[in-house]
Amino acid sequence: MNLEYIVEHIRSKKSYLCVGLDSDIQKIPKHLLDQEDPVFAFNKAIIDATLPYCVAYKINTAFYESRGMKGWASMEKTVRYIPSTHFKIADAKRGDIGNTSSQYAIAFLEQLPFDAITIAPYMGEDSVKPFLQFEGKWAIVLGLTSNPGAHDFELKELKSAGGRLYEHVIQTVSSWGTINNTMFVVGATRADEFLNLRRIAPDHFFLVPGVGAQGGSLKEISEKAMNQQIGILVNSSRDIIFASSGNDFAEAAGQKARSYAEEMSLYLN
Image 1: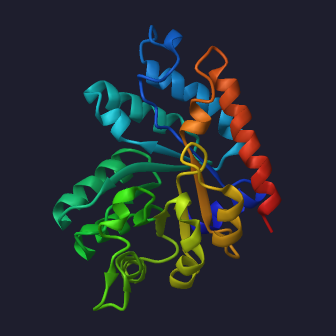
Image 2 (image 1 turned 90 degrees about the vertical axis):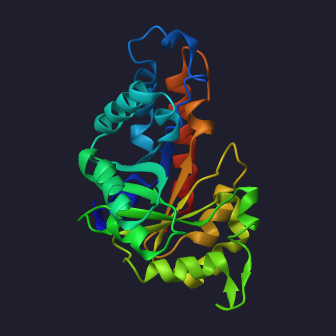
């Protein structure tokens, strides 16, 4: 999926919403547990309800890999169920030496029909480059995250580079790929950093998790992070998919996604 299509899809739908399928089997409605594949049944209903209001889905692979082969099967069925109109992200946070990264890239971008995968860049160029070799596919590199541990490394001053570590990472990674195959993860609770981030990476798309349950402000993000090509995919997971734990869970998720999309339409140029 290319940049032009992503931008056009956002403009036509008036939404830059990404729905996160952090489908914890411990939290899905109890009446689904007698299904052959409860997680897929849950995801299918969520996708059907939210499809009109979002442009992307992000599958957090940890919630699937933790269940072994059954979880992997649920994940594969889910990503194949999402239509090709929507951007499909494997939130896997991979990153290893080059030959290992190549295998991860094949697994998610070739064997499975994901459009993108999240990458941890801290092993350097050879750990990221393998993910950039697939036409129409994207590496979404961790830039500035919302977790408290971001202060341990990402926000540290790097005297040799004249700035903070995350700034150096984004500047460096930007030179490895292009705006057509590289995005950056920036946590929604880092809204005060978005103006600086746009100075460093003015044209790249940002994947912004943390709106909703984690407290990020959609209005503030949109005002500070959007560029001429919109440039942001805002992810909400728990706030949408667990909007209700009852029989109306899918309807509630659809209503929540619609609410996000309606607000987003107000911020689009």
